Image (cartoon, rainbow, N blue to C red; front, side, top):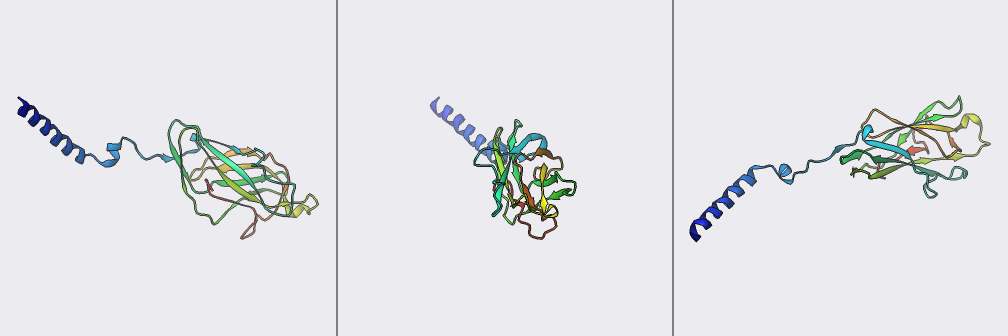
Length: 180
C-alpha cells in the first residue's frame, strides 16, 4: 500500500510539473503589468506646503513650483514622460504659453491606489516694475497627464510674474518629467 501511494504521489508531482511549465510565467504569477494612468484615474493640484511654494517675490534666480498627480482609481497604473502644461495669463496681452520640456530623461512611475507623484516647473520670476510686454502673469494652468488628451484646470495660487519667454528656444521657465 505504501508503494502504491508513493507512486500516485509521484505521478501527481510529474503531472503538476508538466502543467506548470505549459503556463506562461506572467499568468503563473497571477498579476498583469499595470497599464498607464488615464486622466480619469487621477486628481491633480499644486503642492502648496511651505517647502513647496515657489519664491515668486525674489527676482534674481529661478524657483520651482510643483504639480502632483494622485491615483484615485482602484487599480495600479503607471505614469511616464512629461505632462503637457499650458499657462493662461491674467493680462490680456499674455495669452497662452505652452511650456517647453527640460532635457531630463523620464522614468516610469508605478502608482498604487492613493499614491502621489509630482513634477516640477522651473520659473524665472521678475519684478513688478518689469515692463508689461516682458512679463507674464499666470492665472491658470492646463495640465495634461503624460500620453493623455484630457486636462485639469488649476488656478495659480502663488501670485507674482514670470519673465515672458514664450517664443524662446531655451526659456528659463520650463517643466521636468513626472517623478523628477
